[in-house]
Length: 266
Image 1: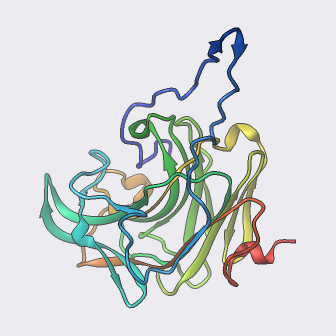
Image 2: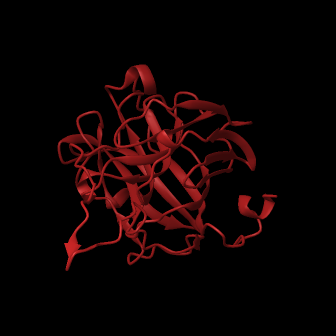
């Protein structure tokens, strides 16, 4: 997949020039400077609207066949459920669910425990994203399970809108059959992806590692048009993506819950 389904508008450069004040150059601005999020563990006893923003009333583009709807986001029995259902919403025939953090997060460990949806043409995603809608270049780090084959997860990253770093990783037993743990550890010069605690991908080429602080997203959506990637869309009734836990641990901090991949690092 050479374009990101999460891209909303044409990219705008986030580069900043040095400013001179009384002949003294201002400090260089880092891409991480606007990271204002701190470490957290979310177990979804409730949905905190001061922390999470629920996408509602739009889609990410013509490739998406559903409209984001707050009606497809609910917390039940200590888990977040994101739905996909046939229901007229805006210009789309289907409604789907997405949440995103209000804060932006920088280098650190990002983790989710989730069970994904089944169905060709569907995408269950956990990712970090920042882009033109936030007046930043398009940077992104992805875990995406395609409903056409839930026996694997795709990892990928975008740097200033450039992707092409996809890798498919097996998920033993199927991502839709039970809960599985997915994590990425993002550092300035290294990016590591983990599935159920096992390292499955390591990137050390700095040109292939995003630098801009990102929001954390969880989403379930579908497409009629991205068939070569997501498969032919086929609706067989309402489905859900279920998230048991999502967490972020800032670099240098100890693990914040026993199952964290941070606890297991040497």
